[in-house]
Length: 350
Image 1 (cartoon, one colour):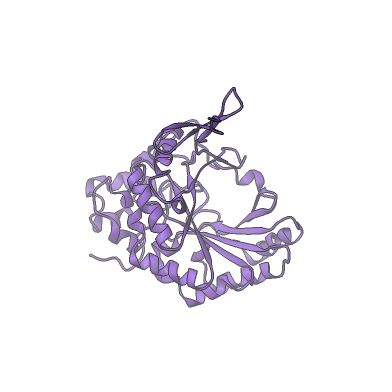
Image 2 (cartoon, one colour):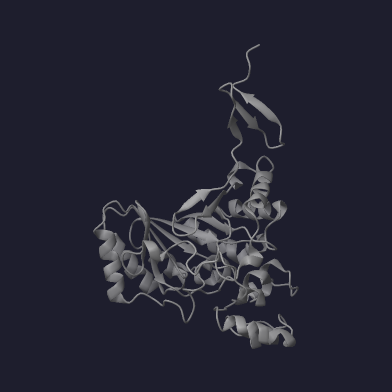
């Protein structure tokens, strides 16, 4: 059976053979709290097993109802840095513009899971969008505006173009970036109308693509990315390091190579955030560092993401990559190569 639209209920998961009927009640308990939607392109990638890395990202798990004391409803502190609705101003030269809190799919590890979905914070009204744009215009240090949410590319081309025209009128904004899963989970949506809309401002436009497993980079997804890049839109990637999905150097390396082959520059590899009910996805920082270190020297430098942590409470991002150079008592550095060999820099004179 092939789906023609996104599925959103436990009954549909059972109908498509993705959840056993006896497990449907447990899934319904999760979907009563957290939104679920799975698009047809993602459904076709699922291989049915409970540990399938695509299914694990999108099919609800009763483990989501188990929370731990360190988990937070707003794990990266959006609300602490929101001067007006729809704006997060955490760093001096850039802001998030959260125009919509709806997504084509809902990731089971989402750090904004308490804010998104049909019962989430909704879409900014025209009046609230005007206030948000006025805030950006009144703060000349803002160089970049990052549209996120929710997934901004779920908006119609008409609404996207209206936002971009608003940003076009703000001369100090030079860069507009879109954070999205759409080219992977709904690739047909990346058409000429949408591309024209996100280029409407005349600003430099970037698209940051969120994907977590190499199987997500299908021919259709790569074609959607090609349409964006061929239109002059630069692309970077965002990936979350997830237990049972991509916590394997070979899998992660395949994904980074797939990005580069698609003209998407690997950018951030996120350590999982402390979102409620996501403990089954988290691994330790030490485990993450070991995986990232194994990529160095084994795959091209073009394929190396920056491993980062969003510090809980809204304190911003911190790089987690291990330093390969450590200062020694003699004023030199002990430098590790990708095989683990140790070297002194500068080398001792003969």
